[in-house]
Image 1 (cartoon, rainbow, N blue to C red):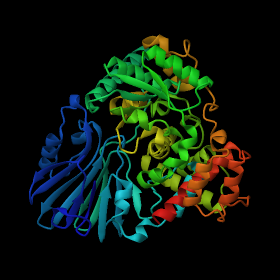
Image 2 (image 1 turned 135 degrees about the horizontal axis):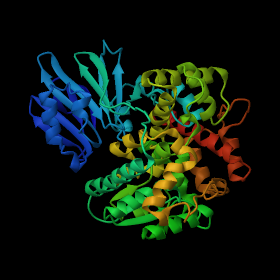
Image 3 (image 1 turned 135 degrees about the vertical axis):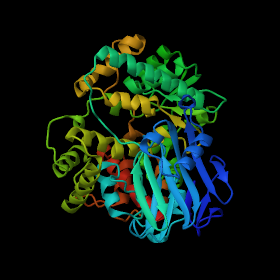
Image 4 (image 1 turned 90 degrees about the vertical axis):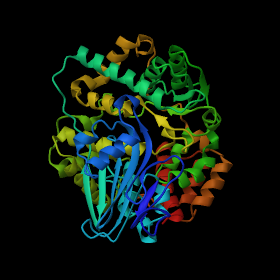
Length: 529
């Protein structure tokens, strides 16, 4: 779905045109208004696209956060309304931003000469000027160092990813920004037993919502890692009556593989070991075309899964579970409280490699700017940043999508589960205390006391998958100039030299991560920039 100025498409209202595919629901009256809606609304919310259209009409497209509160689901959309001064547009996404929303504006917010929004990043790139597609060097710096872009930046210099719960309006050359939801981590004084009961009740309801929203036909495909997150998603969806097939995306004869096998048995679902790991390079081109901001290394989650996807109706994972229930360091309550100081600390914690002084300064400044927009206490801003920039970037990876072939769901992406977990005191997260207790109470056969969770990544030996991989050499040669320097601070190495080291089995895992982050950026620049 793309809505843009009159030069961009074929359908719409005066001054604005839209480009859609058959997934998008289109409602409205010719010449008066138009609602584009892509996604699902939870059946128990009482909302439908038709009711949403009535709400937008009644509020003239200026609905408040309270109006949006019952609009629960995962979606993006745009509402176009004809007026005396031209067509007004409101673009929006769901509360948690599970569905992406991107925008381009030519000029400052109060004097915009051209405007476009969309939920498909490559489709939007095709309809903005070439200068807007140029590589954003600040975004590239962040991706190389952090593995994610921050502060809404994308690889395209002129295109921004909107935050969760975005309300982005365009009216007579002016852009206005509001939110239907904001991240609020405000631990409440609660009894743990009550919190456990509430969380599990909402998790089970999230499973029923997924069952109601999933398209018919075939089993749901559950990624089983052996960790807590997939155990909970699997238990909730089984309880909702869904037929599941599990799959494991690593080496079968590993500790994680054995744990995943035991989890699947406890859930009562078959488990497929997808395998074909050395075939990951054949997905590079499609990843670049469909998900150009997805780290190409994440193609390692796709081999062998296509045959399962062809027989399935939905992809399930435990995405965001660790954000809600784990005790990550950047969620702690001590430390500095000013935006700049928190940004510097977050940079040190999250950096995956050394950065030059100028790059480190730019990345830290972008983190500080994002923190300033979040507000609240120091821990509130830390967690909000981790969710908004880090966790939401990871969803681009192959683990959480099937290139649009089937939809992806997680019980932790349910707004009610998410908000309930934000009330939990940090102390309950230490050592996965709350998570472990939840499973011990509700599904003891899935608890850590019955099935220990793996703690290493030895089930994903990418070094071995790339060693001597002729297909990898061929695909890398198509995407990259082997003579070009990788620009790793303090180290001279070309893409060709790095490739040779991986093929010979001499590269460390960190070398491989560095190579793929840079390859992803460079492949975008050569393809789109």
